[in-house]
Amino acid sequence: MFKTIVFPVDQSREAREAAETVSKLVKTYDSRLVLLSVVEKAEDGQGISQGGVMTSAEAVAKLLQGAQALFAEKGIEAEIIEREGKPPFIICDVADETNAELIVMGSRGLGLTSEGASESVTNLVINLAPCPILIIP
Image 1 (cartoon, rainbow, N blue to C red):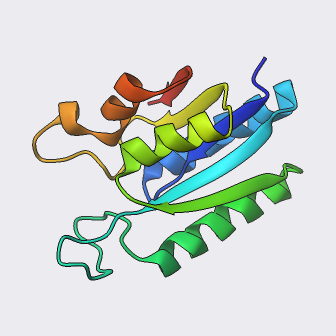
Image 2 (image 1 turned 45 degrees about the vertical axis):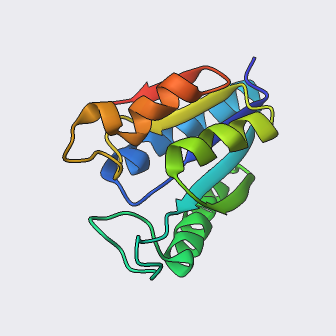
């Protein structure tokens, strides 16, 4: 049913909590798992974290390796993809490129802005995704 699952990861608690659900889905459907994290460059072009946004390629690489190791402990092989850009657009692009049949993500990742939920990464992905999305509260 879900041959490929894309799981965008960031440093949020919600992403960590969603990992258990992702594990169950991958094992249940014998899915290919794609872990994705996005480097979002700071406006001044420097790789400095602003309000928790992932702007350091090194931090993203470390995060992805940690997530890959976490799934490996559960017997799940995961591909990792690191991209640069705006998270909602990159998540949807990667889902399209990998022919994902499901995107799984936390409901309040680090992309929730002061402007409110309408500008959150999750809400934008919901509106742009090329496949179904499972949002973990």
